[in-house]
Amino acid sequence: VQLQAFGGGLVQSGGSLRLSCAASGDTVSTYTMAWFRQAPGKERELVAAIRGRGSSTYYTDTVKGRFTISRDNAKNSVHLQMNSLKTEDSAVYYCAARWGWSVAAYQWSSEDFAYWGQGTEVTVSS
Image 1: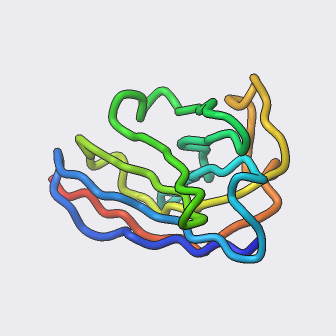
Image 2 (image 1 turned 45 degrees about the vertical axis):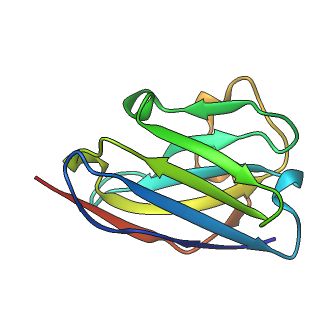
């Protein structure tokens, strides 16, 4: 599967952005889809994930209640709706895919995902 992420940009603190990840070569419902982010000088971290077949989701604690991951099977895409953005959300965001789901999704790292899109940069200004 090939992934292409877009939708990043500059937004003020408290604002919203919607990231999208368009897939080709296979269907997103086949995979667990996820969004990672990487800020300068920091490791890439898992932000949110959604199960391929089913509705299970995972969010890292710092975005719970503010971010929503969703999948659009008709458009073969995955989205990340980001509300109440904070300056600490500034990072390059990447979409990724892997086979299978786990109840221990909180343990996933970038090494657990085989497919990656290019990043899209999100900058939140104060």
